[in-house]
Length: 438
Picture: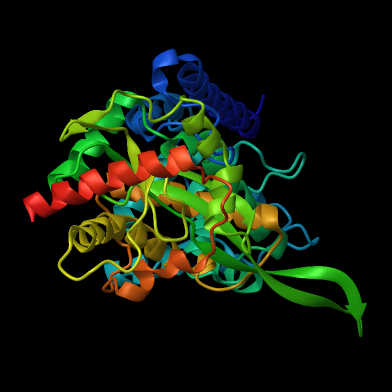
């Protein structure tokens, strides 16, 4: 067995171990009855809190691949780019020239610090390298593969531009981007997942510290991202393109960490209809989530609940603002606190839009766009954990952003006399509580 074959076996074994360990962790949390988590949000379920455990597992598998010292490739080591040609000698190692020298430029190109980039490269190395096209290994280091993928997400650059920048063919560029998103959304999807009951107590404790209100377990919002698709009709040898949008339902905590996300809904649907069709709603109404005992305020039981904008219905587990409150009233005070809590979701949405690929209409199919949204969300949480705020929206959050989700109509599918009465009592009790604390 030659050196190349030994390295390939090492990479494959490392990737296999990392993938199996990740999936084992996922399975364990699915099976544990105390987790409070089900297969909610099919695209990116499960738990963020095992990030450190995942790192340990991946690092164990990395020990197999890191035994070899990475050296710069020579021309005869490089395969065809996929189009029957080899890169020119001055294109080899082009990745070095693709990395900006200054920290500010690095953040502009990759939306993260160089230390975060290096951490991700080490963490993802075996998974990025193990699934090259059969019989056509790319022989690209993990740093290059990662750079291509993150550069696409961070800047939204098209394939030809990325191909030129990194000195690889467009087919290789597309492969690296797709592989990077697949690795994140498959092997690390538990970085964005609904918390366990114990973790939810910590989330609600943080909201209570912020507002004085008990049992708030997150803020729900539903941003839209524009996409450009082909309708399949040909005119003058060109496809007719049409623009539409995709909705992504998210739940975040007070620090803007994403607790739950599901993407892929048609954007013209209202927030209420999207919520009603989601597994998050089903799990809550079936008692699988937000099922801890209520907190009592003025002898009224306050169940665990989420907070949402005016595009959502008023439910016992989902509180929305009062409409047209009287100045100085408890309703107005409640709306002020309600808006304060919602700021964390607004910041999260603004930061997701700050990724270049999500900041403008995306020319891709729905499946690819969902993968982009998922990858950016996973990176969002990972960078929060590392206290790397390079990709975060730095501007002020104004009222227009706060009320943006309310433009989407809500249907009456949830309403009922008993539900409305109970929800109104809970909201009124909390409004009076706010006034006492005001």
